[in-house]
Image (cartoon, rainbow, N blue to C red; front, side, top):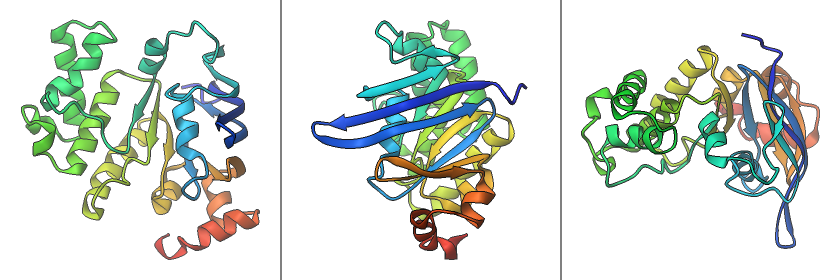
Length: 249
């Protein structure tokens, strides 16, 4: 693996909703195999940034380059891009009328145009990986929150993305279910999957991240490796934010 290969670059990204500026001049790069955790208080712009990267929100200004190509340019094939840059949401976003297996096959068939047999084989492989293969016939309403989120991760993995974005994947879960989702993400990180994770799980972020971005008021206030940010933060805002989590780390 070429660990110096930049696969995603965010350049001077800005996002406003009306007169409200949510993101201001955001710049960072993601290399192949990086696990980037984005931390910060609620309302600091973390999820909006992730939604811009996935083109669920249209950036007001700036550029996002994937494999050197500006995906904010008109004419970008958004579906093809999202195959490569997948997303796992806070509230799972599973199709309630489909069972677990069908949920993991739908995107492969509709978007990636895979044959049904291939999609099923692929779905089963990734459901096995997240320990959900026993539930292939269950509907989402029959699953716990942690199980739903593991299915959502399997569904995203089944598209075989190059980067996976996680938008607070544990914040809708009961505390006892958080661990099962974080364990899956730990495994993916060890296997070298490139990930950008918006999270409030500080101990997890410290443990798993190759790079940490601390956001405050729509800007990147500080960034560095996990040790720099969690052990020796430089900025006052970072220190104050992390002080609240000290007991948990």
